[in-house]
Length: 165
Length: 441
Image (cartoon, rainbow over all chains, first blue to last red; front, side, top):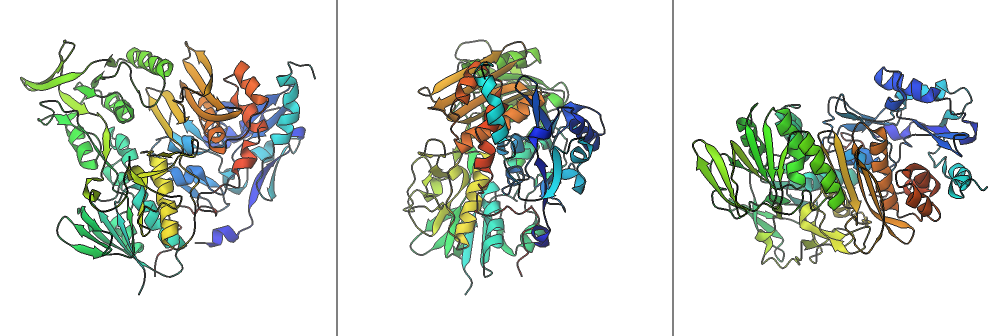
């Protein structure tokens, strides 16, 4: 059982300066995850910065604690073979405890199926990374990290200063 | 001789403690569980009530799981007495169990308002599985259900009752609904939303009697105006199960006072969940947080320490969420703090509401309300939790939130909440998946 942690772990690395805001990752993600071409059903979310002149995708970091997983009262969130925290639909009852447990805001809830959903790395072939034309999302063997803070800090200045800088 | 651990209570705290004990221990110990009921999750009973899951789905540690963990069980039994000098626990059937250390995780029970007639037929509590079965047997399409109490418990089953095709009236003694979960503005929005969804709500209504009325139940009120229904559900609060420890020598204030390792004043007696009064991560003060996430974290921390690890708990975070008729309502931390600086944003027509509370430039509490179909609301729920949990300095981003209380995400990302939270784990190591617990040999 413990062999899972011995596998090399690949994560989604975000390179925000490469993002063009084309939303292909969202389209690819929603199709892979839910069978619909609908950005609103994507578990990777592109955010605009600097008045929609720069963008950055944001998604689950597959954190070590797995707050969603430990919070689930029915053990419906597990660690998949590729190290992703993954919701098992047949076990999830839709109680939303995971949505208040995840401190990153990367849990989602489908009102139609009444189930939680989240990034599961598409079983090791993440559609977002594959769809990104500028390699702003890469799937790499590296430690997970806060990919966006520096970018957001720089890009946020005009937002804070009313466009003065 | 292997260490003998006694776990009293088979709810979330107790089961998490057992699992963590088996994950963390170096040498196999002897674990005994005393539980009044077969272990199940109260959190999922509303989904059993609305028939979206079968009954077997509610059980957490089944007989085969407990056998796999090699746990000696006393199910259907309650602890009656704890002798902390002799290190023994006596059960209600007279059985005496010796322990080296023990965990008290006896949870809470529902309390019915002291009103004549609430012990009659067709008057229910909704807390245990047995009580859930009682409600299921009586609620049919067209049944008029009257719920007494407009708090968290009644709101968790509100959707289920409506889904069964029943008509619903909620009566509440306080001037407004959800008094322990949201502020006046939030409560007003929820009430309007529910009324639009066909729920009748009467606030400021103190029930004085529940009477039989030709096969129905009639509720009388101090302010007059009877309400007649088919089934009454009393959701008038819970009380922690601590009476049995009255003369045990264990220090109890609002709950069993515990240190950062979940130890009581008696070093080999631990407490977790609803019965434990531990540190509040936001205020630093001691508090009872009778919520599922606290029970889970308390249980794991207690289990790790009982296994011989030294794990200090950072403190629990008050967090609640309930969805009623596709409206999400959540609150975090010190949302009720009147001394904190509060930023609010309101979009009445949506409806959407944010209340962000600050000490300096750190967020100490939050209320969030919005349609559950808004991805935005769900994501913001988590980010607000992260901001309160991490306590990151928002610096100039606080001014941004002041102007744009609905634009949480850039402030969250730029304040480095993610980087602050990533190294944090409850047990000081990556969590294991459910089912990954090594089976004791």
